[in-house]
Picture 1 (tube, rainbow, N blue to C red):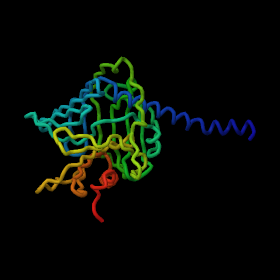
Picture 2 (picture 1 turned 120 degrees about the horizontal axis):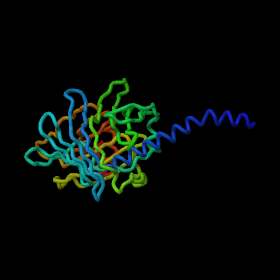
Picture 3 (picture 1 turned 45 degrees about the vertical axis):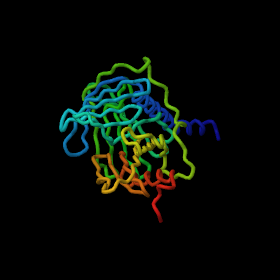
Picture 4 (picture 1 turned 90 degrees about the vertical axis):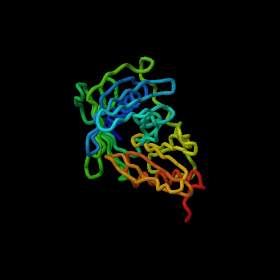
Length: 299
């Protein structure tokens, strides 16, 4: 190939390559902010129905991020997320299983790129702060698109939208007030080791998904076990509980992008929560159940 052709080829490919590097840098900054930034925020969550307003605080403890969220409207509620799990605390102090995931790993941009096409879409202004827009468009129909507005100074998401295949915004989260108290140790934490995510022989998961944690104890439920799966964008929490006599397991539901499905496989009941279509959650439960053959349904 002549020198001129090489130059022309480089000029054509360079913008795409530069863009890929740039979005990965922003994804790494977002990951670092979520794992190592101390902050307080007021967050508006619109998932259809009545919008929810919460006060969210994150502090970095010895075991990682610790969050507390307090509902400012509706019934009094308080959520606490630590390394040991996510709990919903009622006004009387009773702790119950909460819909969410208990831990996270560093964002694996390679896996994200496997399932999503990422693109930067310029700048905006959220809560009085400069922000960069990042869109993650799914390559498959089994998950939602995600649009993010990342704080220019810290990388923290200031606004997010999860969008269905038909263009409907299922859930919108918007920070209306943000107080930043610095990164733990004075600087962003290094990106997590994506290799820490586990590989399970013989387990087939949707593209990009991996098992982050498996067979975790569930606080307050002696026989309960939890699995956490993610593709770097979607986080899914699966709880395996024993089937109790007279217990129908409750009903499935969907609120915005977050869905809850209930499946009985063998002698266990599985509750799965995640911001993915219900069919995807069911597929993840069935794949996870295969880790323990005794929980598989009879054919």
